[in-house]
Amino acid sequence: MIFVNYTGRPFMQDMSENKKLQYLLFANFCVATCLIFDYNDELRETFELVPYPNDEFKTSVIKMLFIDLAWCYALEKVCKTLYLRTFEDKE
Image (cartoon, rainbow, N blue to C red; front, side, top):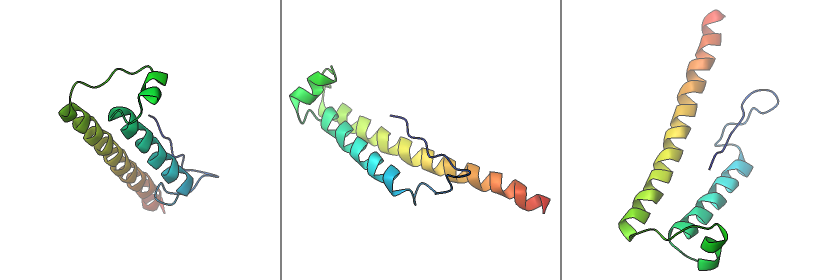
């Protein structure tokens, strides 16, 4: 899954302020969780996925999804802070 939160004119909302993106992220994580834990076999077959080997692997995949989301959010904050600091130094 790839999510992009453009910042710049006319898109100036932070990811924490962008409600539509938050709802989309939540919905996609719910669908991914349903697919990973075989909630619905028809849904899994629609996406042509094979079942995961065991519950430990399923849990580790979910953890990595949340770690990836947290890492990307932190990286966005750091990059934005460093980028905005360059403009403050020029004034």
